Length: 140
Image (tube, rainbow, N blue to C red):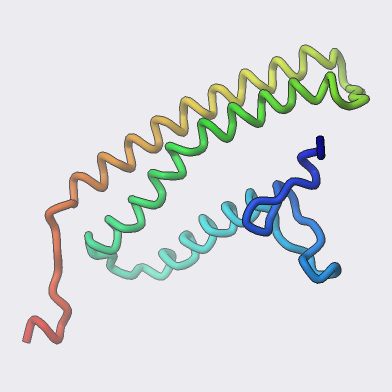
């Protein structure tokens, strides 16, 4: 069975790696997610008005992040624990099994927070579901 370090979905893995042509570095999916949020921060930093229909679409996608993150975080934690049996793992800072247990606990806490995030974004989206707007051309 191949390791996660070589697994690819949609042309990307968990970490940056070689591109399809051998030399280009493809960002890993977590980096793409980070850069996506960073781009939203950049785009919204200019003080533009954000009409409800635009925000509705954005929230629809962002709530998906909140609802999908718990599964990803849980599976990453399970994979971390499984790595103890499949790799020659060591821990220079202390007890190997204890650090994995602590990390998995934090991942479960993060998964719970992500569920709350998804629900809050869904509630925000629902609150503006009936709004629309007219462009200046339509208003005249």
